Image (cartoon, rainbow, N blue to C red; front, side):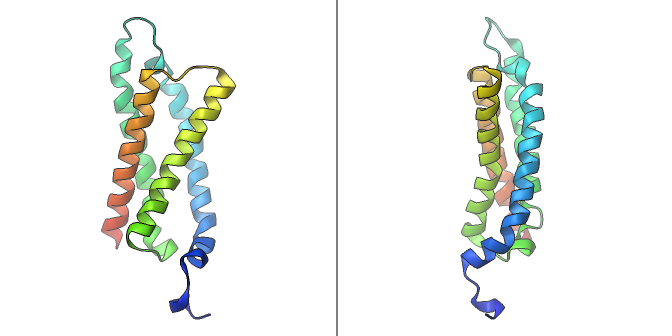
Length: 137
């Protein structure tokens, strides 16, 4: 099969191991973010540290989005919205799945501070992954 007639599934099959490795690194990094942000996640009266939860999530999201999208166009040969959707899912899913598994293991609840960490990480992971992939095209 000549390279010009590859389908999206063929390209994903080739790009899958690279994407899985990057998603694994994001999941491992999210374990560190989960425990570092734990003082911001607690809901005990007046928790002033909760104000820093969006900052922690923002930094984690930008780094994850930047990492997942670095060299994505060259590695996958995909372009446009198909690549952007794949990158956003690959950036956000490890964060949410890892956070849910850690909450099951530790028994800690998802309070407002934890939701702010996850939400800002997801939004800025989305923005940075699409932005980096778009500038590489």
